[in-house]
Length: 188
Ligand SMILES: [Zn+2]
Image (cartoon, rainbow, N blue to C red; front, side, top):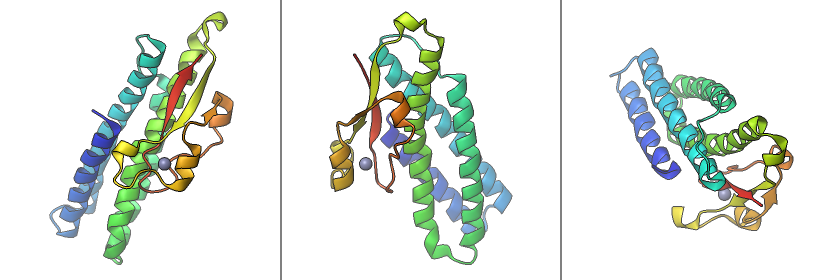
């Protein structure tokens, strides 16, 4: 499973749910319940992917951290609010729905995946003896193979730039809808 696959799967599920709602096959509450299930299942996978990625670089076994789970729960709660608003607005302005769903799905996968990456590392560092904590950075990484047109100029400029754990908190990644950039952990 990759983040790109998660994005595709979640996109199909959320769009289908909206279509069923639009066709009066689902009540608003039922549609919200479907979306909640899809988003929370995706969240678990996003969390796992991030943990596996960090564990591979560190060469250790790691479970997803409690902090990460809490953070992503909060992120999902926010996305559920957004989804509910999308359904409400769909009744009067259906032409805007598709884009808004795509944005929601994008954020629910890529932003959360990057957040989970930095959170997982932070929680791991939090339980290590000080003398075992490696020097590390997060490297902004574009994935040209994942997109049709390649990274945008802004992301391309950032590609390969490394940030410390403190710095990375202030850097916005995945700012545009098709961005598939990730934080990759680098240890020294
Ligand atoms: Zn990007």
